[in-house]
Length: 272
Image 1: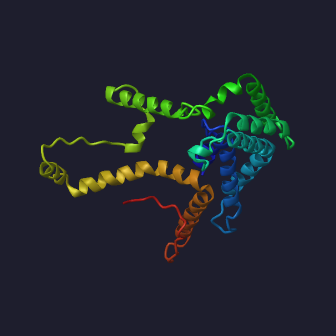
Image 2: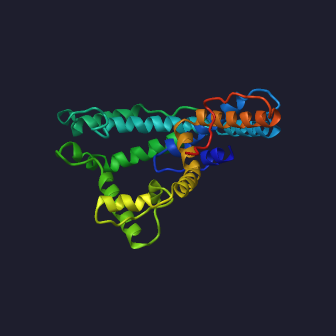
Image 3: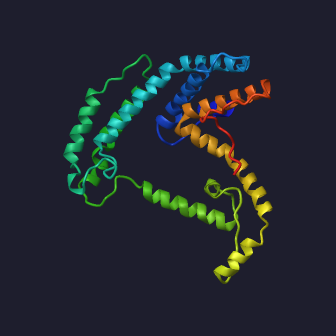
């Protein structure tokens, strides 16, 4: 539970507004809701109650900031819609791509009609002000991609390719490791064999018991990553599963001779 809270308040990302701030706030909301739904029973500890009050205090304190970020994010999505970015994800065909004049009219209309709302408007005001300045200075220079066929709207794909090449070079040269290695697990095995039969023979030489032990260690090492993966995709269900597993364990300790059914949403470590 502490890991989930720490992940919510310290999450960082290059995606503006949404992932860094709002997703963390929504994750805290899911944690608070799961703690609110915790049944009143002997298994409920004072620690979880105090933790719920602290989370609710943080949510109330930052509610205005979260609303400001949410409105700023909606405004950012409206800007992306005006720029029709990117055509492949917006359902536009090649011939349906708008021209420079249409994009200019849509963007100008959006800037003129946008008014910050809410009690706290810091993020909205800064975003609107930065957009106005950049649009007045560089707006027309950014729209050549709508007049020249085949000219992309950004160089993100090129930067992504350079990033992959750079990480690959670091990996094969023995320099500082990169996060890309995490996709392959904690260990890699290199087998050299002239034929597939020799390769199969080498693999069969590994005792099944030793393979089972190493596979279990690998699964245990992956538990933290899998937990955060589930937490980011469905925080409410994940935290509810953690609380259900905790409640189930407490009931087992309090009534060791009774058969207690396990809730299907409980998060139980994978031992396969």
